[in-house]
Image (spheres, rainbow, N blue to C red):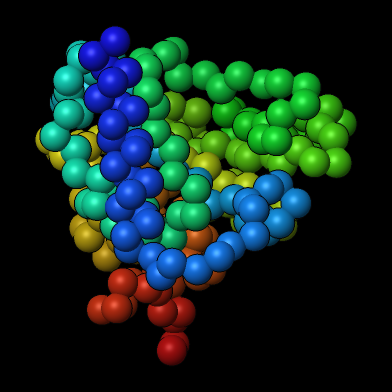
Length: 212
């Protein structure tokens, strides 16, 4: 219960941080029909930040010190328009419902995406997943997903006490120099910002295409 209470408080504070950071304007309801692109990421509070290859579940209170404003700023820097976090530690697998608004392909490959298309209804959106454990090549999966109108999602284990993954070192390097989750983050951030894989980060926090 302690883990749930901490996570719920953090989520509520993150909602408040988003509200405080954005101008107070009236928006149309966010539904699958009027969200053009899904650009989602998850700093996964299911897991503890350790150097061990096999990560343990986070103990109650592990992420109590996470700062909601810093997390909102992190997702904005990534270019994400969907923030996901977890309230209770689970085995990490998404549930699939027949009438769900979102259906996620956790294996991340194009073959699996094509296989589930027949299962979805007119109001269901497909999301494909990029994570180190599924071994997919982000430079291949992301362009294919964008071309097919598939939403993009990624997640990783936090790396510091604040529940964050430092972005500057990752996003300042060419994609070809990176591996694992760093490579996934670098490719997704460029896609979320509408930039190509070959673009480089500029001093305004965005990305500049080669030759410009």
